[in-house]
Length: 194
Image (cartoon, rainbow, N blue to C red; front, side):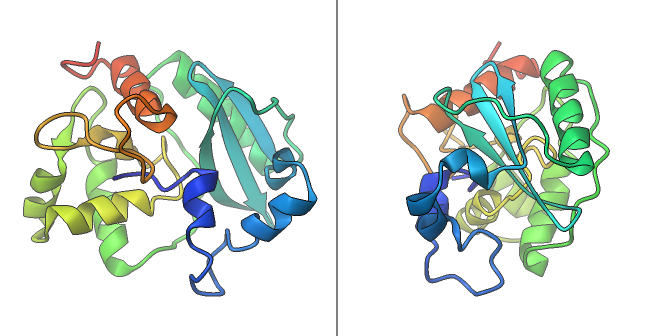
């Protein structure tokens, strides 16, 4: 249940509000290579990270499988984001300093603020986050899944009470997205994932 950032998850939201930044993906993807969706694609040990900017604003970060080709930054902001992602991938203690637009509901932002405060190498369960903000674990999981900026807002640091849990609205224990979550937690030295 966390980090919505995958093309499959985005395709599920066709009925979302017209303000949702990714609504054009399903139609656009039929007419152009998927790499055209991104302002840059950065190589990562688990595959790649797609960076989408628009009008000098960071719109979203997306975990991508290794089949996506690396793409050089097309603007100054995507270059800045790409450099910071590369630094984090080299050093898990690197702290992102990116201008994030204020998006999401009040509840989602509350969850994201709590997640952003989880230190590197630590994890909280959906239930612990829910207790902290006086909510329910499922609602926390849904807010994690709506996170537009994984890595910057480290939703991978939220796990299920009985183990790793899902990731990017995927819960297949051997799937790509859960593998990304495992890699990120190991990279950050989280107990049980090294």
